[in-house]
Amino acid sequence: MADAIRAGGGELVELGDAQALVWSDAASANELEQALGDADQIRWVQLPFAGIENFVHLIEPDRSWTCGKGVYAEPCAELALTLALAGMRGLGTYARAKSWSESRGQSLFGARVTILGGGGIAEALLRLLKPFDCHVTVVRNRVQEMEGADVVVEADRYADCLPGADLVVLALPLTPDTEGMISHGELEMMEPHAWLVNLARGGHIVTDDLVWALSNDVIGGAGLDVTSPEPLPDGHPLWTLANCIITPHTGNTPEMAEPLLAARISQNVRLFAKDEELLGPVHVDLGY
Image 1 (cartoon, rainbow, N blue to C red):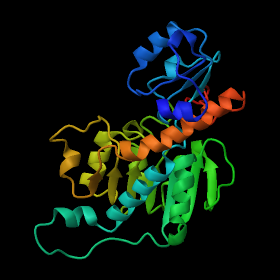
Image 2 (image 1 turned 45 degrees about the vertical axis):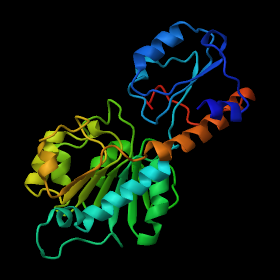
Image 3 (image 1 turned 90 degrees about the vertical axis):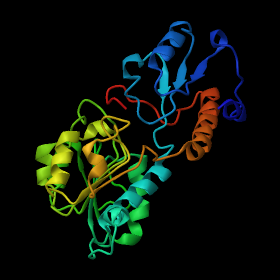
Image 4 (image 1 turned 30 degrees about the vertical axis):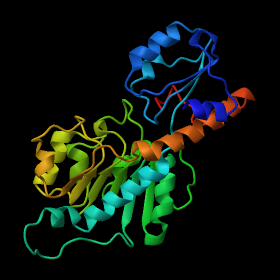
């Protein structure tokens, strides 16, 4: 990060002399609050990840705030596609098998896909889905045309886009409006063969309801890179379900993330020096 700041033309200085603060620890909100309390002159704060739920209470309009939205879109979209293909083609069951088993699975080619969220991950996933000739519906706060999407609808209509979908992907911020948005009722609306892939936050799904849906074949399965709670405890029922594939929040690994975040920091340092609009602005009213 220090190299990225220098590459953008910035200079590393003591906190009391800084105009901007690049923050690296997504879990240390208290330390950030303390740092800002001692540095009223800070005009811009760069947060490391797209999710800002740990910092929402600190964000105020007197400073510019940016986050990592869009930075990690490609690797996260890649994992979303990986989990979708693995689940729909039955690889979770095959990987656990102790003997030759019956054939199972469905193809992603020509499938109906619903993506909840219209940010960078959705944009990258739309590009990856293009060769599969899917019919894709994107649900987002601000309706606008998206390349590769057949239909774009308002966020409050997300439940209408669950029936008929072969694959549902969660790729949206965690806010009070989206917490617990997939629960018993929504899972019942999904197709019995449909797969649910979550690359966003575990809090979007009511975990006990998901365990019920998977145990009773209400949906085809789930591919989860995030869970609630997280880390998922040893012995949790989700670990034992053949129709659930879990990865430990590895949408992007540190090796993938560091050069991507470094590039964003350098670019924003250049823009800040020119007093131009920064990339990845936090929208306080929307919570992301």
